[in-house]
Image (cartoon, rainbow, N blue to C red; front, top):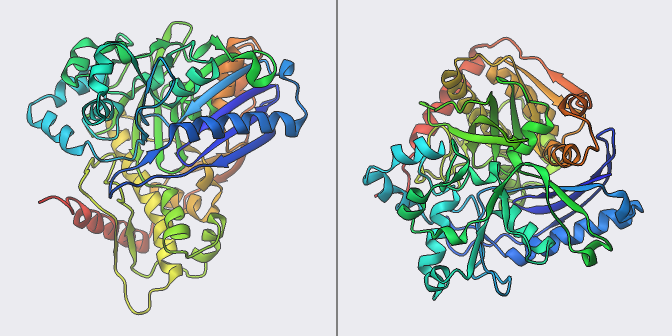
Length: 494
């Protein structure tokens, strides 16, 4: 077996995979989302570690699997979420600042005003946005009492969630991150795959805080023996979206996947050469295996499946997220209602930190069902905006879209996605491609699988959604989406 630890934005999961790439068992535990003030999102790092360890232990017990049968652990994680802890005690000095958090938007504005954006894009492939880790680290060092002094003395460690988990899994012996996660920090030069002293100086982040950058598929450490009864190799690490790209078998240049999670994340494999974007997308490291670095173009939508969680928890439209499809199907259309779920600003290709969520087109006849349908449609429209930008950057027309993540199980959404894009949408049998990708990376490192051709053979189609011919109604929906989008932008700016 291979054990995948899938540490997400709202829950920690542990999934056991067998040699055929099939799921043997799953354990999942949600943890608290902390919203100290509008636009801020935090997690307690100890909750993340506790829940991840608990699910790993639970899935082994539930499946009756001995530790000796686990050949390796693969880790995949919410990527830009930032933790700073004291190396001497292992104690976090502040809550984890989540990728959705917007508190450093003004700091990014200041860097852009000072003409720093081209330098950061050239070296990191990223746009200057509060989404990424660099300004989050800077904020913690500047706002937590005594943090800057401790950092200068070499007592603090920074990590994205993969680093935090590995530190705890190894009892504080190992401080590493893989190339894919490093590329999301604003601190890593993606061409040399190394921390960049100039960028670190600009953001005032001491190099002593940073983890060692390692391969995405290699034995980098072993767990403490007392955690699971004996030591297990940690052999695969990748940020969640890069892991999903690998798990979807998108190992050839031009292949594209979209993950419908809390946000939506689309990646196109561009091979061994980074493709700079002129359409507000990100150039990122896909993975580094055997000394070979591969790259991807990425577009990130901040609020995807999270709009369904908002309908469930915030508006209490449904009791469970799975009920949203049935509610939306109570009506034949959204009847002019448009939802733009810019709750934490807009991501690619708009990058507007000051946009906020809006609902347009409400009438006395509007119902929960109309709003639910419009919310689902908003996910597909946001994905479509990113794909069109990606096609322009790569100079490639999309042949097919491979999909995964929780919301990809929604047939209504997937068919609407195909119709909006006028492109075939393919859903695999195993939707847990993020965890599967981490498992594949780990298994390859310990020769559980021979090569990528073997693992790609396990990818199987569950359902193909063919697009319906575009009609005037769809053209009208797209037109209304773009009108609503324009009116949402800059909502909270002075």
